[in-house]
Amino acid sequence: MSGERVVVVGSGMAATRLVEELVARRTGHHVTVLGDEPHAPYNRILLSAVLEGTHSRAALTLRTAGWYAEQGVDLRLGARVLDVDRDAREVMLVDGTRLGYDRLVLATGSVPTLPPIRGLVRVDGRLHDAVHAFRSLDDCDRLDAAVTSGSTGSTHGAVRRAVVVGGGLLGLQVARALGVRGLAVEVVEGGEHLLRSQVDAKAGAIIARDLRRLGVTVYTGARAVRLDDAGLVLDNGYTLETDLVVLTAGGRPSTALARRAGLTVRRGIVVDDRLRSVADERVHAVGDCAEHGGRTTGFVPPAWEQAALVAAHLAGEDVTYAGTRSVARLRATGLEVAVLGDPQATGGEVVEVTNPVVGSHRRLVVRDGRIVAGTLVGDLSRIGLITQHYDRGTVLGPTEPGLLLMPDRATAAAVPVLPDDAEVCACAGVSAGAVRACASLEEARQTTRATTGCGGCSAAVRLLLAARTAPLEGTPR
Image (tube, rainbow, N blue to C red; front, side, top):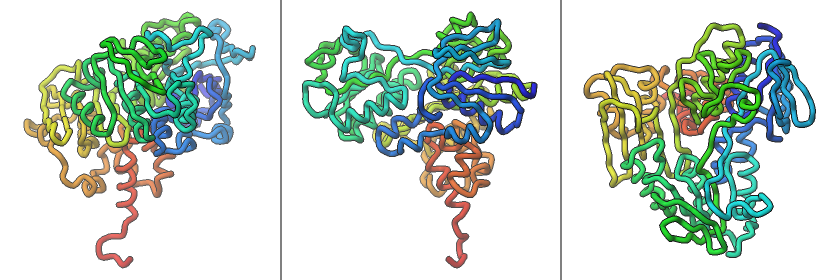
């Protein structure tokens, strides 16, 4: 398989991981990456951190254009793909360029969908000046500029108020970021509680309470139906005066290109156990756009796992994909949420510890002694150990699930003494030992990809590295 032409459509986090894995294997393939956006591949998960001001724009870059050139990879930015000719094995760009391929990998991600709110779109087809999507770096730049300059077209003068439509992970991260920037923020969620796709009503109530404590107003069980000069009108009769409306609800796998190419598409591009299209074995799909076993994912860990598997397959390794674990983290200042698997739909015995006074809710679903799903809100001191058991399918004793949910009184001191095989980065599957083997944070980022996903492991990684380099007790300083 050496020397094949591999064309990757997409330059997001899954595509970047795929290229890294191919480079590491030295397959000799001629790799071309086609990115629709003009920016070097970047971390979408941390866009809200840039908006919040805790990360610089430059910190989002996964790999620079220079790195691709050094590795002999042809990175083409601003290259929009128009069509795929499977008979000729060619990809056609909007500028008329045709690129031949032996293997095609679709990593097209997901696309936002507009909620049915009247007034979002003007007569000329443009979004209302006060309305912002939040999916791309350009979206983040526009929203940041609106917050900074107050240029929204609003009749209310300077930007003081914002409404975030959608109470999912992205919506809460954006709401918190805008709150940190000094805006009065309201969240509108059509479901009965926040994060309804990931957590139960108890956890949702605690998250809503935490947001209110942080100054964010929450409306659940209400839908926005119209945007007019008075503000955003809800179906319960309330009108929310606002200067900005940020849309974070609604998204679907980007499959238009695959449909035009005649590939099998349901919700996503249907793939087999080698992540090949069931209609064409020379076409693979990874990340948000792929559907395996009737399921699509929207998180970094499965996308990276799929990318690594396709790279192994392209290198000639006999590997198969049996589905993946899913670990989602809410990345927002003052909010701590982690979700393992699908705790809402997964059956089993439930072990639960809730303390609404301090704002914590911990719930594990256990089947045959193994953790099969879980929700942790407000206290993530045991997330590394719990994720390790979940990932490995460890058979726990009768009392162990309950003990895992008890708070760790010395979280910071406990991190450096984690066993080497304990997982500290759920996105990249990085162990404490792998982090300890690195001499610096930059080396850990480059060699293990720790901290480059959701960023939730940053504190633990820094503590491990600090403990590695700290002088032993009694050693002269």
